[in-house]
Amino acid sequence: HHQAGFQKSPHYAHAQHDTLVAVLWQETSQISANIPLCFSQPSQTSPTQLVALQGLQANQNLLIHPTSHKWLFGYIPSHYRGYPFALINEQDTARQVLCFDLDSQLLQDPVLTDGQAFYTKQGEPSPLLKNTLQFLTLRQQGLQQTQTLVDQIVQADLLNPWTIQIETPDGQKTPLTGLLKVDETKLRALPATTLQELVHSGAMALIYAQLLSEARLVNLQKLWQAHTQMANQPDELDLDTLFGEEDNSLKF
Image (cartoon, rainbow, N blue to C red; front, side, top):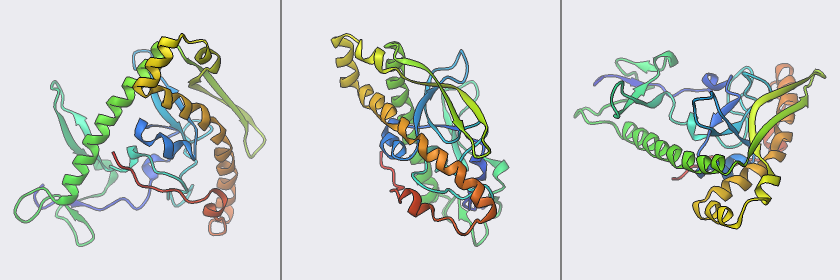
């Protein structure tokens, strides 16, 4: 790939069906300011994860414009900001390798004038490639740290099913299931020693971030209504005025 490179994605079409996205504890304050946090267990054999809720029905991401696929408002989760790169576990080993999503159609070989090269003329990884690898490595570490906190919450038996049923713009009420949330009654009943452990580890901050973010369901309702307007008047909706502008930076 010494002559290859890629073009940065101009949109987020690859995320348009992501109702949930895995997030890090480091970005909960930015995310909870816009959309709800919750927990999800993809399967019985997989661990419970901290996720952000991006839609109110399956295969729906209300944070992405329905036609242009631009990000509409608020903070963009770190999960999307390494795309089209990802760290993948090498088969039969514990080593992780930097991979590129060929389905993105963003690969250029050889690299063009509008692209970003993978390597310098001297054969060294380009600054962009180095930064991408560093970002993804730090994000992987953040995922492991976040999972430790979530496991502690699960072990304290604080999660209960969270079924969301909101009336859609067409008047239908379809419940969204498979989500988990913190049970405040269980939280108040915990012994002092367990509460102290949750505070000391940082899990308590995660608990309150999730509880407080539940009020952000109203933003998803507004976005669902806005999606209908965007289909008819795509240039007349001012989302910055409706929701306010948010800082899109992330530091580890």
